[in-house]
Image (tube, rainbow, N blue to C red; front, side):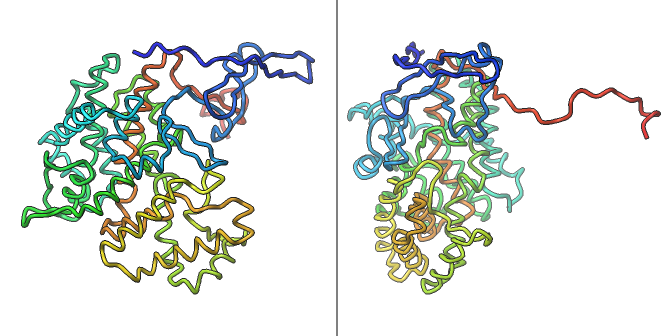
Length: 440
């Protein structure tokens, strides 16, 4: 267990004054290693009788974390202190997984052992093959993912004791290792092809592509350029601080729920189009534009508040600068298209021209609507032959390690309590009950 100390209070305090009563209250100000200081409101209700009101929790810190740091104004994303672009260029996904789980980059021997441990957890319980048959063939793959991941607790109940560090480690490894297998099986099931079992001689991303596109009919060789692209995509999506799905995992975990149920809850949250479905929306938008010559018309529509059309893939809830992940994916996108011999990809042409115009347009620059990670990922997936219905599934495969790392951190945090947000009640006051025979 982690015996970490609570956040350090600064010498500053925040004074809150009640204008009705004239009473003042001193609130401690806590300081992290990076980022803005926070006002500690944990005793606010006990001391003042008031709650804070913050829909969407945009100004509320829900936990203390050492995993991921984001500076949206400067376009910075760090995993355990390492810049995301450096990791994407120089590391592989397994190394980043080890980093997120354990706090620093592994040695050669540590990485070798970690890769082996993950590799030997990639197979699913054979009975889960029959579980898939309960879904309709036309089920959305995310629906299958939510159901199957939630069901893992019924097949691997030997690793659901969250108070046991060894159980937590085994559950963490199982989730990271089995998620690509589940994702590939969900895809194969929807297209009517037989499941392809994982191979122990392949690396993580290679194995995923092999299970996705291999068949028993012939030998399938994984393209190393595509495997590297997939590895980068997984790294870039591995964690992103306290987003909706991660907060969902933490909230579910705060009740003591088993890790498989918590990650299933995270997948359900990720399924929403405002979260994990954004790259699919980008592809749909580029298809709607149809041709680069139509871009000015759609730019004009995007500026019109009365027009429902919006430029997807631009702007971010956190980043008010260029998304650092988007720069890596732009380069990766060209590498993939070059490798596959796709010289005149209409959607890429539209994307490049749309990016150029938007970055030079005063309207988008003033509103800081820069391209984000979803802008290019959908084009890469399309070029690799991955259907749009599977885009969010790939996001879940990548984000699982972040969810698991955040879940473990929460379990080990002695200051964490069961999540219990408050509300501003606007409903009816207490009513007098009228018996049914007297009601009009």
